[in-house]
Image (cartoon, rainbow, N blue to C red; front, side, top):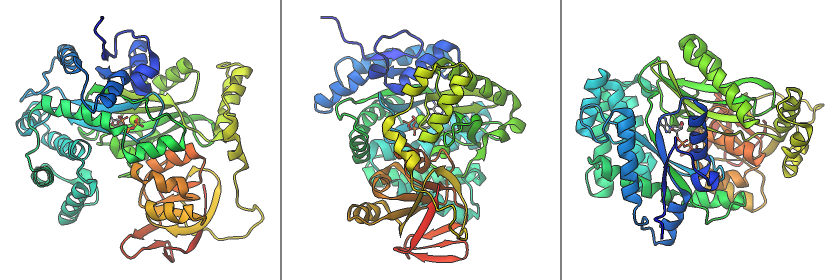
Length: 499
Ligand SMILES: Nc1ncnc2c1ncn2[C@@H]1O[C@H](COP(=O)(O)OP(=O)(O)OP(=O)(O)O)[C@@H](O)[C@H]1O
Ligand SMILES: [Mg+2]
């Protein structure tokens, strides 16, 4: 019997498409073939994940060997060694199912670093802050994803450090602060798991791959699948991708962009960018990002290349794309492209626009509209004749108006929503773990995050009103009160939002 194959490099041709490689893997392979700048890497197939699940969470025979071979090829391609102590190859390990499930499964960045390697990376890049920033992120993501440590343990330590230093942004922390933070994180890791943080790069990789397989089964992923009619037995692929670094300083950064406006479908530039940051900072809504256009002044060459690449990808896929990118020292890399989740108004507008531009036919345009989504157009809206005063403004992240009682956490939103009450989930930002609350809420209001934050993306997908990045909103979760501009509000008070 022919040995089954579970691993494919981004640059080798494969049959099987997104069912086998997952949407992210297929996109990375296709972009590589198009000559778009994508870091090198390989995909472990959904077959491997299904074998793992049916095998009582044991990886199938031969998988570890195949991963080793592909890692050796990656070392060859990049000229760096995984686990090297001076100038190590670092990788991300990323989930990627056949059907898009935004942010529902797990990803770990900067894999392959350890104490000695972080010192080496600081020396070889002459950038200690960058090396330590990468290492603290690894310990946190690995601790959360592989060992199930609560994010709050790390967030608390980071928050405490920022208050002690009197700074508001992660980027204001200096190398010496980060050194202390890493010690704290390693202590948290050891307390929670009873063992020290793994120093062996291969052990990190092996456990990360298994953890990403396991992330298919997290409660939030299951809830999302049920809400979106996605079968439970598909499994996820795992992408191992050479790291490129947006956190090297002010000429580096990371962002998300759409080839058209995902709320209206209007052509034109649409996206968000954060300088000196790594990917998840934008999606998680930790810092409110800048509009994409600001990149032009900071890094004109990468910006021009990004615009050209967006155009190419839209023409290639003949559909509106949602793109993740990173700039490392002014060099552009694409990390993901997928069909953009959009409101139905945007779907209509974009389809008409693409017919006018000769990109698709009229028949294709009609087929692009999901009939079930059309009811979004009939969304409740505020009575245009009504008189009201606006308490505060944020970003119109997902259209429609909603009125309901304020709730401050997903569990309460779920309980009261299921009981038939109209509730508005009000949070600093939402995370994928809030999915059960988002499903039951009539609308979502967040203080942080932009149009590509988790709350915004999920709300648009569900056709639910969402206002994000409302700066005038502050929340006291313990007292269960919020302040919006002048107004003091308590849980249960009624508010109206218009997305
Ligand atoms: N090798 C890499 N180099 C630099 N950034 C990376 C790399 N791999 C992933 N990222 C970034 O890390 C973030 C998280 O990655 P990933 O796309 O795997 O998950 P996600 O965006 O949270 O969820 P989704 O599964 O919906 O894409 C993204 O912003 C991505 O661009
Ligand atoms: Mg992504």
